[in-house]
Image 1 (cartoon, protein in one colour):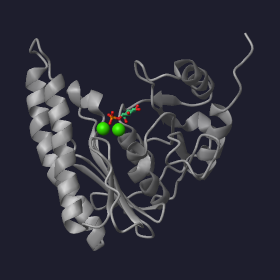
Image 2 (cartoon, rainbow, N blue to C red; image 1 turned 180 degrees about the horizontal axis):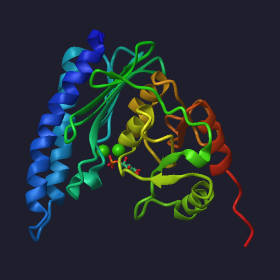
Image 3 (tube, rainbow, N blue to C red; image 1 turned 30 degrees about the horizontal axis):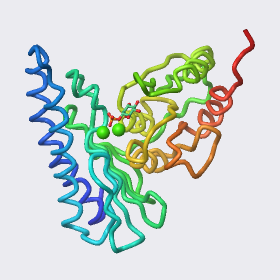
Image 4 (spheres, protein in one colour; image 1 turned 45 degrees about the horizontal axis):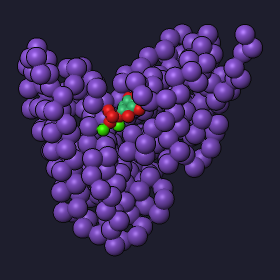
Length: 266
Ligand code: IPD
Ligand code: CA
Ligand code: CA
């Protein structure tokens, strides 16, 4: 599998951040049993990972913009290119010693996501995709699942957290979807959920209230794996809106219908 120079830069940044996160994850597991807990330590790990990614990316392309979750946005002089980065997606999992988390890096060109990398150092899964070049996990080509019937599908979703709002709305969506599918899963890391859709592990996924850095890399992974991803109602312009729904051609369409069914009358 040949990677472009830009994708290589993204991979190197993700691997370097992954090394740092991996070391910190080991320490977090030790701190679980301490009275103070690992909270502050995780915040530091998160910021450290963003610093590493930011330095690597800006060293390679100093004129590009940079939007990361943990620091002030850099506009860049280039105008057309912007990195979109979540240094640690799945912070709550990381904090609790659950090995489902990762660094997500995307490249946006003139508004379109053209390359993406998601790396989970705990499982050493490196997901990569670039426009027209296919999607991969390590060296293996990815395809979304081929299932056509919702009743055969395992669907991922993001559960709103404390203070996250929209709990009632989510419960209505869940009630509708879980009545029609084989199973529901929630990984607690949107980037990993989206990578799992690209890998055909999850047949579909939906979540509202996300940020661009949670979903940017996942968009290109899913599309390059032959899948579909949009806003909750099928909108094509959804990066900033934060609502996503994804799957193969059939499941994406079916999920949009089911997840948007109106609230039943009591
Ligand atoms: C969170 C995770 C989680 C999702 C939240 C996100 P973070 O990102 O992706 O799965 O449900 O909405 O904020 O805080 O771990 O980077
Ligand atoms: Ca995130
Ligand atoms: Ca994060």
